[in-house]
Image 1 (cartoon, one colour):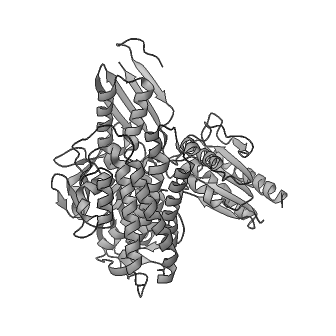
Image 2 (image 1 turned 30 degrees about the vertical axis):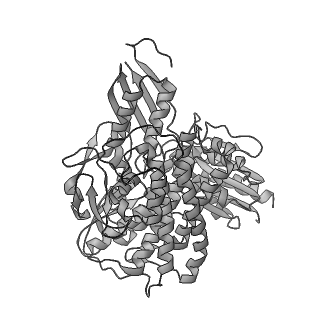
Amino acid sequence: MPGSLVIGVGNRYRGDDAVGIVVARRVRELAPEIPMQLEEAEPVDLMDRWEGAVRVVVVDAVVSDSAPGTVHRFEPVHTPLPAQLFRYSTHSFSVAEAVELARTLDRLPPELVLYGIEGERFTAGAELSPAVSAVVDEVARRIVAEVTGHA
Amino acid sequence: MNSEGPRKTKTVKVDYLARVEGEGAIYVRVKGDRVTDVKLRIYEPPRFFEAFLRGRHFTEAPDITARICGICPVAYQMTSVLAMEQACGVKVEGPLRDLRRLLYCGEWIESHGLHVYMLHAPDFLGYQGAVEMAKDHRELVQRGLQLKKVGNELMTLLGGREIHPINMKVGGFYRVPTRSELKPITERLKWARDAALETVRWVSTFSFPDYDQDYEFVALRHPEEYPVNEGQVVSSSGLGIDPTEYEEYFQEEHVEHSTALHSRLRGHDAYFVGPMARYSLNFDRLPPLVQEAAREAGLGPVCRNPFRSIIVRSLEILYACEESLRIIAAYERPDVPAVPVEPRAGVGMACTEAPRGLIYHRYRIDDAGIIQDAKIVPPTSQNQRTIEADLRRVVEQNHMLAEDKLTWLCEQATRNYDPCISCSTHFLKLRIERE
């Protein structure tokens, strides 16, 4: 899948903050030919990770007023992200800010899809909450379909 | 929120404390011109990790502790391997020690680079964040990102994987680079050294509130080096102890408003760890290039104004670049990537200097090397009392300011410490109550 890249963002030891990691890994299981990376540190590094890629999908946990397990999907190249959505973040620089910074520096990929999965609890050591766990497979399959559909 | 009169309670809620690692919460109560209460609410110390480590093999400690903090995994890994080696009576010297120092320099460059440019500089230039700043100062932001990237590259080169370096182990590394493998990064580090010097010059032009305080600085000190990996624990008031004595002098207590533990220094109370502490206790250990840059930037051998910490962090980026180049120039590939470490029952302790300050680990292991218990004290945990004291003073000196300006100042005062709150908490709000 040349030019495609799936990036899971999160912290594997912080409850629902692991969902990006878990989804990315599920994508790897379903379609190992799709390049996949994990971002467990600073989302500002996303700009370096997706350099040269044409079609990028990023998955992260979000906290907004939606029900846990809600799946939000954005295409930031076409529409600026709602700033509030990615504001609560265990990273110092949220994914939304990283995307907006990339836009300012002309470093967005040609195609970018952001999946934000509404999280419920973020305590260290906790597993994914049931509502979040329940959507992992569905989101992973959607991503695989979207990416391979363009092949 | 608007004032309803001097005797009424006024509450200002801010959604989040932008631009610190993870999230946290500040609560301040003001009566007239006096601060009656300040609480830094921080949740979740790395207790999960302390518990998770129990029953694991001592060789697993670096990989597990690396995940405590996404921005400073090396700090946790390094302290854990040193503590395990201490327990087992092993000391790693020579080129392996130099490589560890080099890896840690990479983390300093990356972490400080991120903080100076993306998290702290916007405060001084009146921007909400790096994104807004980038619109007006594109090249500056790009320079910051490149600096951070050099740090990342150094970590990848030595660590084997960019984040959560996997190459480190008890006794050394899984693999050590050849001289020629280190050569390409030399050019990048030379660029970074110049960029770091430009950074020092740039941040020294910022406007800093007058805010010198008489802090009790605590840091490592070494007979020859600027402290990174090793040293005695020293303080402004003359403390000088081995890391193995840390718990006799530094006590942690649980405070009601925070699930993180608060640290106290015996005979004092709050103390201050981090770049300013290192700098103020070790200025004489800095190479001439860095000392000269410090003087040009208007600093003396001691810095007591936490708003100027941005200058000190920039100086430490410069130091880390310079030190990295020195280590690489002198590097001889060791014959073996690691020394053997046989487990033995006992307790091991170590302190190193994470980007954010002193970090302490203690482990008890049995004869088979199984971890019985673990204690991990992050730098930000240790700074909490000091941050609270600063907030108290900032609010008392500025209570006349409009709410939003005062809130901003509180956030900025907290950001001075580059708090790695993700090591110890998750959520975040700022609330000022006036009564």
